[in-house]
Length: 190
Image 1 (cartoon, rainbow, N blue to C red):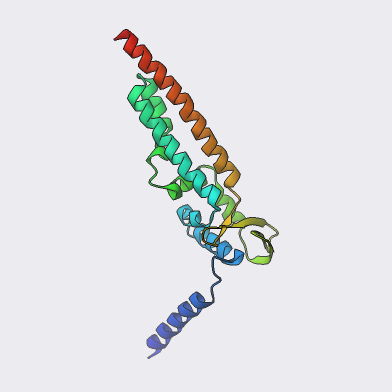
Image 2: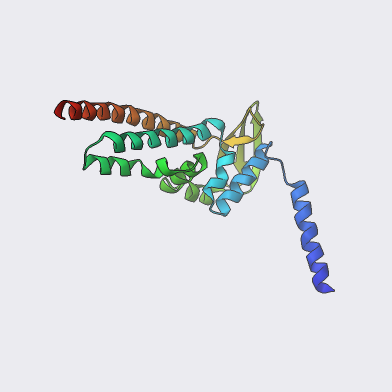
């Protein structure tokens, strides 16, 4: 009988927690979901709670790195082919943007940084489509409401990801130009 009572209590707690958990359409709810992903050491779980430009940047990085690697493999001579293809491999092989984010979160220590700083919410300040969640430790996390679905997205990594997307585009342009040169040289010599 005691086992049944404990099981019922656990089930009721789970249902109550779910019913009263704040929506991710509030800054608090989005912040709590970021905390869950960090506590579970799942950077891919954090991806849904990034602002839209950060998510788009991750897909852009993947797409340009994939195109760059394909261009290298098609036109570059050895040993440059192997070296340059490997340089783009991790991002090019990523199945989607969440996987690219996970690569950067691991590579740049973002999850460790968040794990150190996350704590309970002291206060939330909302101004239009922007919000700041301040923790009891005094750390401030900026969020922006995503217009397409109303979910609040963390803006902390957007600048870095956008810069990486721009770098990936520039790298592709350089690689494409070099590949054209290699192709012209091969046609002229062959």
